[in-house]
Length: 255
Ligand SMILES: [Zn+2]
Image 1 (cartoon, rainbow, N blue to C red):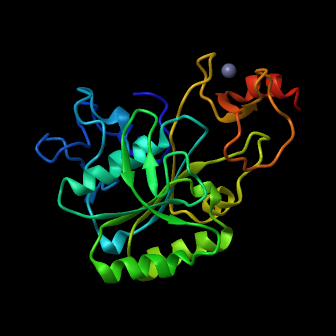
Image 2 (image 1 turned 180 degrees about the vertical axis):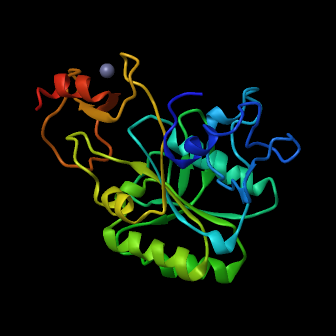
């Protein structure tokens, strides 16, 4: 197993690797002491067979938590989100998907992954009260979990609204977003989630050198890293490249 982050890997390091957090039938459902691992997100290291790369979702309202899955660009966080949502839905549990409204990369109200999968999603902008949105969605029908893509664009106030939804409406909220911008600064939504989330996990990708990529550069059309510019820039011709910190410092001529 790789150098996994977070409590899941801490737990996994104490249990035999023949086990898997995958399907219920895969003998593998893990119980450690009396605690069933119920994390519905990705645990790619969990199954040696590779057949069950995702852990089994389960819904325990009393255990609702605010999750933050953070990554740099192009790590596949939308793929991870869509897979986790699918895990609920294939067991007959509905999910509520939300993404930032001004992100039109995949059309209005859609979460799409670079590997070609996508789902319709409701949208939010900075005027929305997300507690009210989740409460209104609950009134229209039961769902097991809220999934939020582009969570870096949440305001601090909205992250508090999500925390209240977890605490008072007892619904798990899974946020997926970028940790830092191209200048190495936290996004506001990510800063608030790092402060308030109950659980945090890293969706990892690698730099061209093979090290884990934690930073991102914004490249202009000439291929050089841009050092200035707005934190949020939608619809430009720039490309984003994820790098380890050392190669980010080289590219940015930075500290
Ligand atoms: Zn590197």
